[in-house]
Length: 201
Image (cartoon, rainbow, N blue to C red):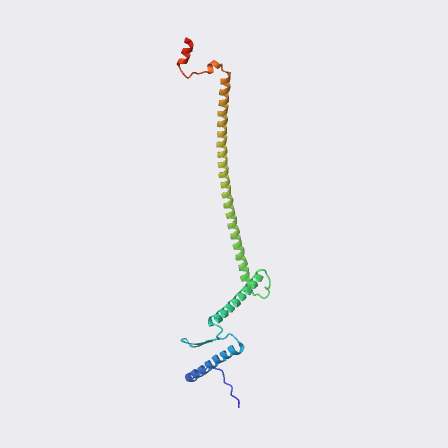
């Protein structure tokens, strides 16, 4: 005679519920161990009897933290994939693609997003233009300053060249003047009495 089918529902009797929980918990952990050995599978079982009671089993070749990390990573990948698909769908809607199934409210939302995007683009364009104007004005001021410094340096250099030319011309005139003077006038004795001595002789 076969075993009767048990209806799966919450056991109201506290004692019966506790006995069933203990038996099923042991059976679940036993099955987890069997799967680990027979199938060489990484198995981890966590059972919370109450907020303060925890029962767990982890296959010897696997750590619970590794299984938890793998599960969390899988959920994160799934979340990112769903988010990426939603962003691609929103992008198609912004490009007026696949919008036949959208209702009026969704279309108005897309329209508002486009208007806000145009406003943002206009503001950024104006900011960029103002920044370019400021940069151009700054470069023009720097260019004027460099030109002024260059002109001052060139003027100072020209003055030095004129001074050198004037000095050279002055020396040249003196040489020509001395060349035209008689030899007697060009002699200037170093001793004052030498001229008198020459007269006495």
